[in-house]
Image (cartoon, rainbow, N blue to C red):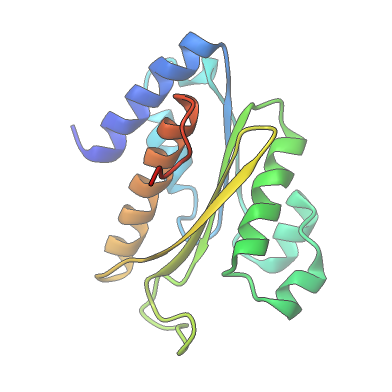
Length: 166
């Protein structure tokens, strides 16, 4: 069993115990987090919805991310992933949400946001936590690492911890 499947199974057990659900808002992973979650039999009991909002227009249309944020800080930013997480949570009945936006490559990077830059945000209904990661490797490696990181953060949050303690 790979890491994302194992983490999804653990997350599912935890969410079932809490009677809670999760939702995802994804850009650079293109639904990879939702795919990992729905690999688990019975995930319909704890997975509410998955939003794949690759374009900025869809981030606005589906998740109510302010278009001004894209102009001010860009799609790959703390502000945008936090807004994505809040929007996904608002549109669903899920207690927990995760959102990701990044530069998976091979192109699209900049000096400030090189290939491998990913912002992640986790929401629990009262707080939103976010973190910037710099992943190494090709496009597939960046996406896989993002999925695992997102699931690890959700599991921490569902156990009452910050997504990345310390």
